[in-house]
Amino acid sequence: MRQVIIQLVQHLRPGGIETMALDLLSHIGSLDTNSETHIVSLEGTAEQALNAWPRLKPYRQKLHFLNKPAGLRPDAIIALSGLLKQLQATAIHTHHIGPLLYGGTAAKLAGIKVHVHTEHDAWHLNASANRRLQRMLIAILKPTLVADCDAVADVLTRYFPRSNPQVILNGIDTRKFTPVHPDEQCLMKAKLKLPQYGTLIGCAARLETVKGHHFLLEALSRLHPRFILALAGDGSLREELQATAERLGINNRVHFLGALDDMPAFYRAIDIFCLPSLNEGLPLSPLEAQASGVPVVITDVGGCRSIVCKNSGELVEPGNASALERGLINCQHRSSQFTPRKFVLKNANLDNTAQAYFSLLQLGGAS
Image (cartoon, rainbow, N blue to C red):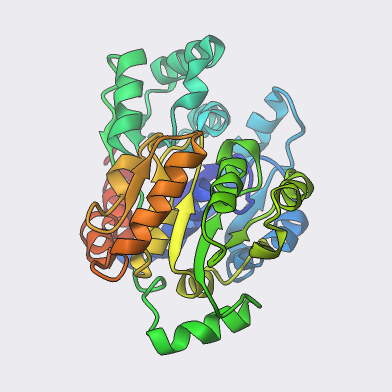
């Protein structure tokens, strides 16, 4: 029987959850020719999403947008239910609490019995109102609950003892993210207009407070001038971060690249990857970097502990510029001795992630 799987997200802007939904769209279809996957975004329009994220263009026919205004909108549930019927959906996969509410309710109205819900982080559950809402939704909608790492599963179990979450680690496409030959690294740097000299630290994240860029800039100011920083991503703090770099006297060592479409080229250009987040679920960027042969320095938040190759990478305290400084120095000293790619191939391969989700999303595969 033909299966139509719907991935439901809050919005389609560059980010970890959205990238995972897009990867599942492309990979689940390859597992079974009788299955197809669509992505539905609660917020925004197709024009906004395609302009902000060119990677979406090849999948345009499988993307749908409800353009839901802010606030609780029952009419969006009705519209989503109608879309699910129109697409003849047989299963729905929701990501995060908003899509759980809208997608789970709409699926019930549309008569869809297979509902998988993934939590990609747990820090939103620090708010008691969110805990009450999620507890109610889990009890009423009864989705098959998935956590993207053990840390998130532990929090879900603590707050919702009967939820019994399964753990499916996020995976990345190891065929897309591959190491570069040393002789070709200079070409990648030239492509991104980055300097050829020094040790190039790369960070790929939205320029927002939660990503901790201020601490990375402070750490850079303490490092030898041979260390250079390239920031991939954009956000509301760009001007503030540029001003901070100037105040610290390192503006000539910090390169703001904006949102990039060619992330493999970015990872192949850098020597060390750093993600100084204050909160995370299970981020994809450190996995992409390590699959590209680049060692990582990341903060010990969310599920980050489970995605660092211990032979090559460093896990450091969040919100601590001195810890980042030490981690970057230690990582540089070890960078030529170990490659983290084998770690990703074993623990976070997208093929395994897609297969695990496909098994849950098959008709009758969810409880």
